[in-house]
Length: 270
Image 1 (cartoon, rainbow, N blue to C red):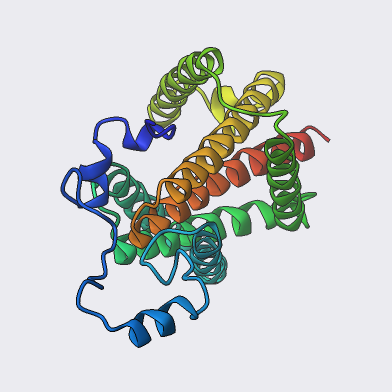
Image 2: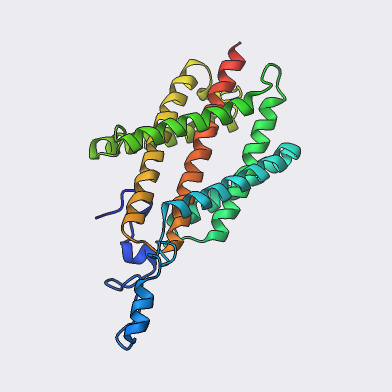
């Protein structure tokens, strides 16, 4: 079975897991054990995936919570010191690319990415909160993000929202269009051709693009859930739980920024 998450598209499972093709995940030589030793071994509780050095969904959840905790800590620092927002964005962008293309996940780089993105989110949220009429926008965005993520997970667990070849094509086209439009918008804003807080991503057009971006982010969450479930079922090494945590953290950060942008546009129009 091939992995669903695009992150793994360029690597074979063996390369991504850091193992040789055909090598077993674990092996215990019991050829020379006595009958008493074998009986004692068989009476022991069944080994879990974690005991065997394999990735589990529970371990992935724990690592995701750890990453999100670092995001919150970084956000608190960014809120207090808004000047850290730009460095956090740049460092987070670079580390994000490194982690995406790295064959074997690096826990240290993933945690650094989480902290750097936290600085960016904290600075951005604090900046918007300081504008007239936008008090409370950050907590609204946080609650909305977890509500959307929770509904997406519930739909995924029920089997009503799953990946498919057709949806994959729509997702890729949508992502390419969103990236190209965002880059063009950034260039036009930096050169002074257009103004405003969000440039072309403001007003009614900004709301429409924001809704599309949120829908794309929910599909990215489904991709993350699918990848984590497949890796766990296939007995991937425990280190791959960090890949799942990174994917979820990155998608939740993206979802939060898009929801925050939508709320800011709505508040600004008022």
